[in-house]
Image 1 (spheres, rainbow, N blue to C red):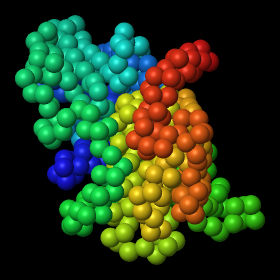
Image 2: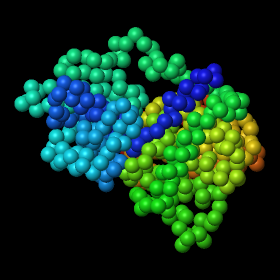
Image 3: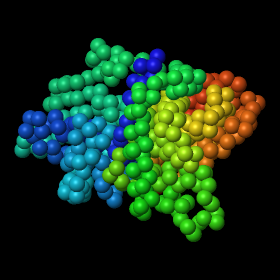
Image 4: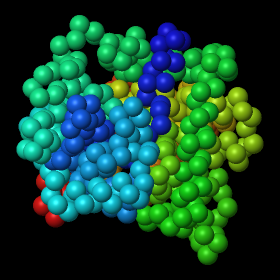
Length: 434
């Protein structure tokens, strides 16, 4: 079990540059372009088809290294500078020159984006063609299931790779069954986080390095709505004060400010989302700094936070109408409980308090305004943790809360993945008709 959980953490907690929906588009395009270049053919035209949720989360979010939003520029950058070997950091070689070339492709209408006819939540089809002068070559790459999961590659009608045709039931090679994240329990997560030797958990501290760099970037520069900078501005000290809550909210929001407005720094993501990775990491770091927690306590708290978020996400699916900060801030609430010397019962109470509070916060696409939701999630996380540590837990008589913590989490999953399906469709309809 220990090795499987470590594999799960390493699979779901990894660096990502930019919002992962447009990055998935850039990755698919980059791979198709590479297939053409492998036969000495220059990519000319890009045709991308995406699922509803990819479109929703890619319409209004900043793309790294640019002052532009949307899937068109992301797809073009996948062609001009993308490297598929970088996976979720596919655009890390972005330069002013590659941005200029990408803008030219978009302005000349060489990039088309449309909805795919698919029921999948996470799906990208990237078809890249050469000019007729070069023989009209065509490469196709399909991403499905995970943001960096390339399941199909095709060149001039010849299938190069197809997971569907593979005999492997575990294409990632990590030995995990598909629903492992959903099947683990909060009790198992806590036992793993507290009993595993520290040296086997040290890798989680990279999330501190990456996400704190984003915090610093967001506080230094005027990204997006500047939520983090505003919370810490001296002029607002009379309103917010110098509290643990203000510190955690501001730091987390600042990282989101930067990431959603085009920062070229990567985030340590969680379950395919940089904002979820930020929200599962930064509040725990902020409280640890205030408490002067030692290195080991912080590492174990981060493991708890990330795993709780991954576990809940296992019930929801990769993309849904439920805002990911609900999931990630629930994880950070548990990490904060651990830092404050709470145990299993207090963590269960914190989770129930969170689910009884901000369930229903909708995802209306990735954008700079996500920093506001992140800040709200952090505020709820601290409130839920403090109440839990004082022995206060929302009653099982309330709404979707049950005595059993796993049933409570499953209820949240049903609300987000099934109950809010029509909400998801309506949000997209409103967004595309603006």
